[in-house]
Image (cartoon, rainbow, N blue to C red):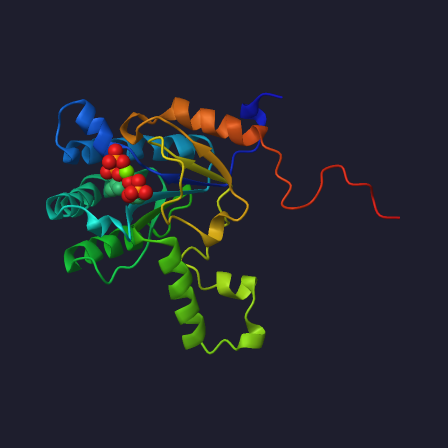
Length: 240
Ligand code: IPE
Ligand code: IPE
Ligand code: MG
């Protein structure tokens, strides 16, 4: 069977890495790599809609990215604000529901307001949920879930994997089926830690601004080749 006839992954998570190197190759400041990265994202969102993917979660800014030079950080913040005003209407027209996952406390009021607007104006859309992980860390997510569970009065005897999952930032989404990292590095860099217990990983040397439909299809084809056992065995004899 061709891979296109197979069910698509319901949830794809992407570490959009390699913007800086893409710019460097062109003797451009890193900012231009991030700018090209936004354009790549818009195309990939459409490609995911075309492939009936339900959730796309993208790593846009990690808890650790504050360590970057302040001009790069402020450039990124400005770029995100500009991207919201430039693409929000288009995303809405495409049927995209936008959700922001991450610690909003540390971002500016302006950006927080833009996030709120992006979420509220797209809340009714159903084609694809775009989860933007911003000021996000997998460890932050686990800690904030624990804090919320404690604040809600969850007792130790009632705590379970399913219970803690209810407090994770993306409790509304199924766990990712496919994790893609562009840019050639083979690591998670504190992206979704809790949620990737049984996710299939695909690492690509492609730099994020160059990632498009062809690379997405290659990752989905690799996903379809995987034998997902979730700890069980395939073709297990039926118990007598
Ligand atoms: C990823 O690209 C985007 C962000 C982390 C915001 P990088 O900026 O990490 O690009 P490289 O890895 O330096 O090429
Ligand atoms: C991960 O990329 C974060 C994002 C893509 C937003 P980094 O470039 O920050 O990761 P490291 O530093 O190579 O691990
Ligand atoms: Mg990087």
